Image (tube, rainbow, N blue to C red; front, side):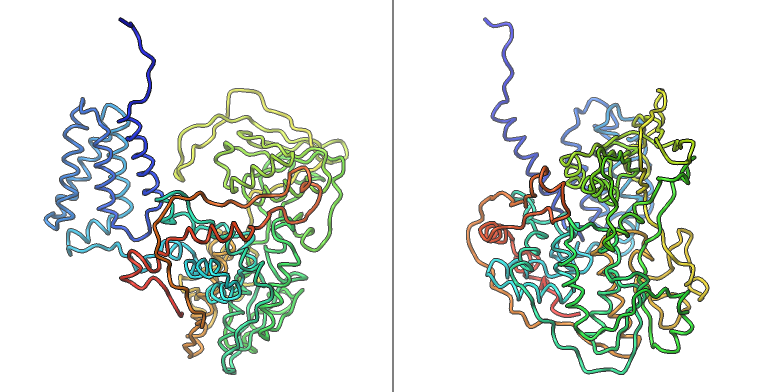
Length: 612
């Protein structure tokens, strides 16, 4: 008789593990618009299935909470029941013996705080505020509302030019987004219920690469109205594009030598080739848009002067000023900002870092851009210093991994405290205080705190600060435009500026530094609302005919991810690092789309916005 046995997973446990993975996939692909009360109840029931039942808060308290949630969903609850639900959840969270009960109750309390209007609507009016206006998750999560299932289906059919035309209906920069979009559309892709999200961004790039030059649609009849767009970044270019299509006379004013904004002055060539960017901009300007560069509004020309010439304005000035760390020695020679470095590179001014030791401060995408650029500029050693853990970096994980593969090092949990300068005032080292990870902060990330160890000296010939960007708003504040506490311009969700007739604003200058696709979306919204302000109601449409969905049995199939050039090769130049899909890969990947615009809720609610 054996005293002990080697533990091996039973058949039942193996099946349970598979069910857990399936549940994780479904949670990960939950679309926007679900009823938060119903969702809270189902999450709670999953938590109840995990409890051991030993302590009263779990065994009885969670059951009582579930009963109250069901009562609310059935329309039988009162506001008194809502307060009772809150008190019970708080009691369970405070008294449960283990994390299973505590976190289950916390989940309910978080929902009560975040969706209280939904709970009250169920109780007072017996209806749900949750809705499915757009039942297609990828389209709902794309800030610009691009018809993603449509162009993916067109790629599958080999109709690449039509795919580009369809994208341009909502996003005039398909080429740019094909290379650098952060693809929020993939976050809730229903394909994740089966295996993994469709590689939407890579399919967009494949479409534009294969389509070649695709002509722009004809502009509407001239309206006689003149619109000034201040700022030639992605937001300004997008607004100008749609306004020109609507027949308005559009002029762009930009402070820099060339158009593109942060696309040119913030994203290096190896991520977005300049020749590609220039071709996209030229295509947009071909609609007859006039351009004045090297003109700073508020300095070279005032808003008052422009008001005499134009019927409306769109402010899309971006976020191009650097932020300071505030540490001792920051004004030393040899300390520069990421914004300044990338701006020079954008104008073709390549500094020589040969043999130098470079230290970058920051953990976002801009910090990764300057880190990887420094490697390409010949630096002997490049270190990126970040006060939190590497997994807490706001940069995309693939950017961090790419920088490390190219030879840069990430020094996590190191908080900069001062910059040491030599006798000539040149920076020679960054001093940091090692950190230890601590409690989770309000943003859900574990906050660092100083570790009980000595400060660390990191030698450096050049220190690059990449901790964020600010807004250049001085010239506009004098014109009566309200500036918020963070330095951003005040505008509402329709992009109109309060108390400023005919003035609209959007993009980074309103939200703070964000993504390219969000700036494009703001430009689209502004164009539609400026058109309405000018007394028109032009519709942006496309005549592209959608392919019919194919009916076949669904089989799990792995996601095709794009590859990059070998790190030992790519780190020596600024040539695009990403390799596009092959025809075989694009065909397979595009066929994985579940066509949510046709099936599921799409069949009931029309899943496609054909005009705006």
